[in-house]
Length: 229
Ligand code: DC
Image (cartoon, rainbow, N blue to C red; front, side):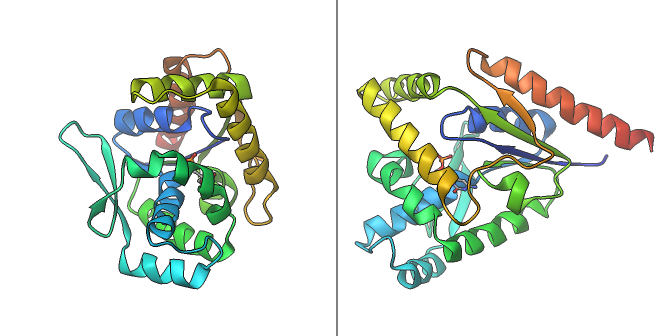
C-alpha cells in the first residue's frame, strides 16, 4: 500500500503535535516532532554554556551528541541528545524562551532539515513544525496549516503546565506565545508561513478528535485516489 507524507505546520500550541501523533499512530506512520529537534539543540547550547550565536561550537557539540528518538514502555516518544534523555528538559522554560534564536540560524536549520528529510525517506511520515510544507517536504501529498487564537493557545499551555504541576501566569503565557509567533514568522530563514497548497484549519474552539478526523479524512481521500490509479 502506498504511504504518504503528511506535513502539519502552524504556530506554537496550535495542537500540531497532539494531532500529528494520533494520526501517525492510526496510519502506522512515523511521527517526527521537528520542534523537539530545535529544542534539543538549544538545550545542548544552554547546558554547555554556549552563546546562542556561537554556531560553530553548537554544531560541533551536535556532531558529538546527535539527536535521536526512542519510546518508553507506554509508546510515548523520547528525545535523546547523545545518550541523555532530554524529553522533559527540552520543555522547560529556559529552553522554550531561547529556542527561537537557535531556530533562526541558517546553518543549524540546514543540519536539522537534512536529518528530517533522511527520516522521511524511510516511508509514511507525519511531520510537524513550521517549515515542513514549505522547505522540508515541499512535495508532501498532504499539507495542513493549523492556527488558533493566542488566547486559546495560552489556555492550552496553561492547562498542560498545570497537569505537569507547574503553575504559570496566563497573561505571561499569552505574551510569550505572541512573542514567539512574531519571531518565528519574521525570521529571515524559513519563516513560519503556510505553503501555497496547504489546507488551513482554525482549531479555536475545535477539539482534538475533530481536528484528527478532518486531517485523517483528507489523507484517506489521497490514499484512495492513488489506489484507483
Ligand atoms: O513546536 P515547538 O514549540 O516545539 O517549536 C520550538 C521552536 O522551534 C519554535 O520557536 C519554532 C522552532 N521550529 C522551527 O523553527 N521549525 C520547525 N520545523 C519546528 C520548530
